[in-house]
Length: 144
Image (cartoon, rainbow, N blue to C red; front, side, top):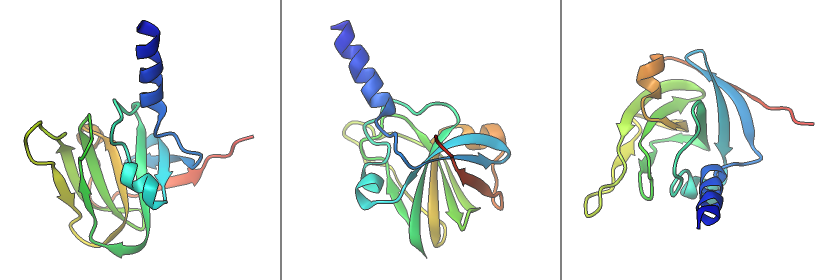
């Protein structure tokens, strides 16, 4: 039984891992960034995950700028959402809660057209003072 729980925990914790990882900085804080580019990856996102490691984030990228709608369906931990236009913070949704059984699923909408949305562990924005106008700087991580 303990082995089964351990396997489930490891699988759940790292299930969001993608080959499209980058190093990044937001408000001067280093991040490990998983980039979601495909519709199936975007639809899944972090839903069903037990947690996300500290200083990790998930970036959703789009080919156009449009108002984006995110919901917390299947989320098991709260998030901070950072709405980006070409890497510049144009909006922030802090402490987005997980769904409550029998309640509505929390939904968030970008304040304007964006082409990127960053999901961070709840509290990151407040802890590091992320603000409108900050820039997300990320580079491809080189692997051997």
